[in-house]
Length: 68
Image (cartoon, rainbow, N blue to C red; front, side):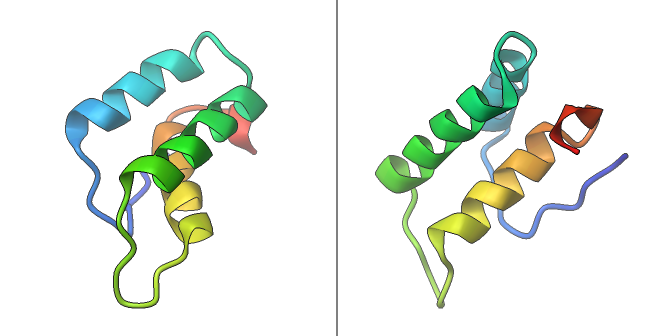
């Protein structure tokens, strides 16, 4: 499944999380993404942290059915 992200994500960030997701549980990956969004992302135009977390998780698992 190809996912079209709603936000712009750095390619290296996505690839690093995709790699990590192969070796950890979905819950652990989600926790890491939540921490990343909270610590490193700047919200704009009414965005919420949850929207960014969900978008990045969808992108990470777009080729992996474990998220569903």
